[in-house]
Picture 1 (tube, rainbow, N blue to C red):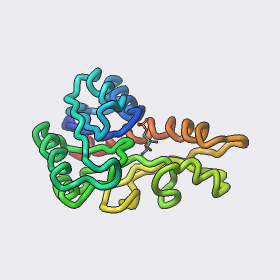
Picture 2: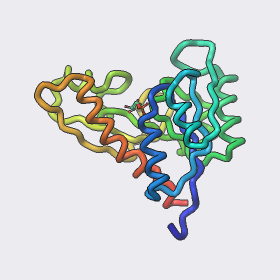
Picture 3: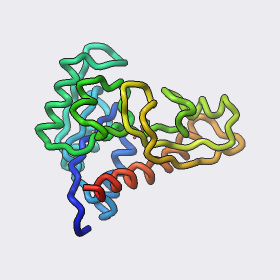
Length: 196
Ligand code: GRF
């Protein structure tokens, strides 16, 4: 990968971490010139932390006082401090169930991306696959976008379509969307590396 700098990634998640798994596979297979520097979570028991640890990254749980929603300024600063300590170039939100506030956004301008399981601007927020089914969509998909102060409102970077099949449940549809996410997210991160 001549001419490409190895991007240092900070991944934030609250859950399973299958997208982190896809990033790690892409790095291991040489498709993504990046290093997984740190994995951070607001949930100490989240499998994404164990996966990060297994992959050799620094892992930390920073548990906010409020159960969900926004992060307090001091908590947000803890996230930013660790990302800076680890010299992170790109912050990837992969199932991080918190709203990122102004101080965090200012620390990483156009350097925080999120993956969302719908074709934004349709079906923002949680349960996007169920929202697509309820709307009677024949096609849905996934989006990687820049993070701004809203919920799933930032500028779209890339999308991939996924068909809705007869008999789909929210679970079967979400699983099909995730397969697409696992291709799209590492590919988008690779474009950041190529730009360095
Ligand atoms: C993904 O579907 C992503 O689009 C959404 O949260 C889910 C995280 O899944 N923001 P995982 O933890 O990467 O498996």
